[in-house]
Each structure stands twice: as C-alpha cells, then as structure tokens.
Length: 459
Ligand code: UDP
Image 1 (cartoon, rainbow, N blue to C red):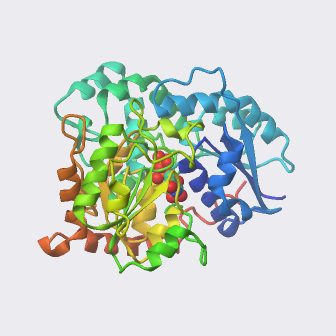
Image 2 (cartoon, rainbow, N blue to C red):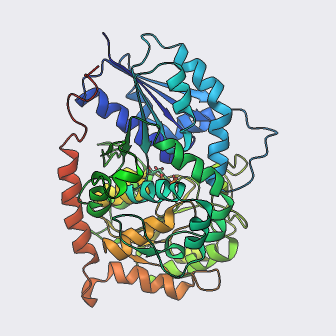
C-alpha cells in the first residue's frame, strides 16, 4: 500500500520552512511514496513570494498546497501564540476537508505545535499515526508539557516564585529569565491546552539535535523525568530542519557581500515579522553606526505596541520610505552599510563568508540557520519563546552575546558593546570559536536520520 503523509503548518515562515524540510526528509529517508504539505495562510500571494524557491521543489511526490484563511472581521488581538492558535482553529474545517480529499488516504499525519487541535481531526479520520512537529527547541516543548501537567495552584506558585523552575531533568532557570510572566498568564489557557494535546500524539518531532540540547533530550528519554510528563509519547530530535542556501542565487545583497572581507559584516534581522519602536529603531541605527563595522540591516517601519505586528500587516510594504531612520544615517553609512527593506535572502546571507555576526530576535529558525553556518549571534529577543532561545544561545551554548534591555529600551552603547563582544575577538572570549564548534555537530546531525527506520513502515 502506498505510504502517504499529510503535513500541516500554521501561518508564518517560521512554521512553513521546518514543515517543508521535514516533508522532504520523510520522502527521502523514510520510504514515503508521497508527502502532501498544507500551509495555512491569510495571505497566499505573500506566502508564495516569501517561500520562492521552496515551492519549485514541489512535484507529484511532494505536493504543496495552501489552505487560505479569511481573517477579515475577526478579532485576532492578543499574543502571537493566541492569534496563531485561533487562526488554526478557524482553519480546522478546511484542514478536515483537505485531508478527506487526499487520495490515497494518508497513514501518517504531522501538525506543528500551534495546530494540535488538528490531531483530533486526524484521529476522527482514522489516520494511523499522528505527530506533532515542534518548530522550536526541546526545552520549549519541555516547558509547555510540564506547565500543562501542573495544577493551577502549583503553576501560579512557580510563576510568582523567586526560585528556579523545576522542569524535570532540565537546567533550572528562573521563570522571568526565559518568559515574560504577564504575557504568559494571558496565554496560559491556550498554552495549557497545547501542552495537554501534545501527549495525545503518537510521537513528537523536534527541530533540534542531541548535541544542541543533550540535557533536555536526555530527560525526554528518561521515564523518570520528562518521559513521565510525556506519558511515554516518544520524542524524536529531527533537526536541524533548515533550508540550505541556493547556489548561484543572484541578489544585490549577495553581490555587495562578495566585495566585503571575510567575517566583517554584521547581519541584523528580526525574522519574518519582528519590528521595533521608532525610538528603538533610532537607537539601533546610531548603535550600528558607532560600532564602525560593516552591516546589512533588514529594516521594517516602526511598530509601537506589538513587536510581532508586521507578521500580519499588509499595509506596509517594500516601497515604503525609510524616512523613519535618523537624519543623514543612510548617507553617513553608505560605504559600510546596506539597508534592505522588509525581507532578505537569509540562508544565503548567513552562508556567506563575509558575515561575521548575526543580530537576531532569536526566532528558532534564525538561531538554527546561524548555528548551521557557524555564525555567532547577538541575541535580541522580542516575542514568543525567543527569551528562552536567547538564554540558550548566550548562557548555555555561549555562542552569542545578549543585549540588555534597560528601562524598556536597548541603548546604543549596549548595542556597540555587545556587537563588539562578538566581532572583536581580541578580548579573549570564545563566542566565535564556540559557534564554529557547534556548527560541526549540526553537520553531523544533518548526515543522520533520527526516527527509527522501520517506524513508518510498521502496521
Ligand atoms: N527570513 C528570511 N528573510 C528575512 C526574514 C526572515 O528568509 O528577511 C526567514 C528566515 O531565514 C527564517 C524564517 O524566515 O527561516 C523566520 O523564522 P524564525 O523562526 O527565525 O522567526 P519568526 O519569523 O518565526 O519570528
């Protein structure tokens, strides 16, 4: 019987990219005859344009379809997590009919962490194996399932506690170091629901690998630790699931990079939706200028209230002027800097030998793309689970410096100091060396398949 897998991604490049990569991995290494990937989006043209080359990889065995969502008139206020979870809830009827229309009926189903309600649909449709893909770290999975396993009283004690969060078998960290407690409380119900639904899957795939998160992955394997919280649901590290740079891609940014010395350029980007306030944008511009280093900055118009606002903002586009940048900034930095509006070919940039550091919002895909290319980071978390990721890269893995937010803003002096900490290695820190070492473990992980070879064939 033909082995067909149906994969569903919630809106956003940060989810599309790893689910497409997982689809290719299953097709190439796990005996699938066909993979159909469904991408839920409220803006098909924009998604198509951002995905670009990834769509050209589609074919009869690797089918990519969009599930369009009309969100006009919907109240999608709240954090990014609640917004995306609500969008996935709205998409459920369409996900159901899309799966029902598949021939042959899929035997394997995968949905990302924001769409766990679709597991029940897959069950109802009698799909044999149902999985969740975690598009961020194993540590975030641990956090989500552990918090969901607690009763309210204990959970609130942790939230207000000055002690470290006792996730079984994981490094103890104070809650407010890795999460924003007030934001977490607002999304608590959604987060607890997701944590409870994850363990209804037959297996969980995580975009990570053993050397990146040995302690957390070890705890998932231990029936006395996270294995118990997962109630025996197996967790497979399947990463790094990253797009690779397209050889020979032509782009003005890459032409410019070709002219710069090795390791000399600071790449600044806040993912597919990150935006700064006007004041913060100014501070970053002055900070970059003061470092004296070459830079590429993917710049977005300021957003005052919600740093993730541009993810769904269709009004601002690449033709918008850059008049929000400080007076004379573009002229003063024209010989050393390149400002790119809204979007840049990130994989190709990070793979370029001229890149010396990545100032990043620490979206997990950006973190992995940086690690895969051995590029050290300056961590600037903005929203979602990015504070956890920033903690991991700066405190645990020591492949990043971390910017300090004082009085709600990162000052230009702080930006200069933290960029220099990564770029100017004479002060004896090992950030760049550590990043190169970790890159080797990613290369090793890429050579392996991590799901048992007979896993999908059985039954
Ligand atoms: N990306 C890109 N060009 C940009 C901004 C982002 O290609 O100008 C890609 C980036 O390479 C990554 C994804 O979009 O694969 C963003 O995912 P991430 O998890 O880093 O952040 P998110 O957008 O989900 O916050």
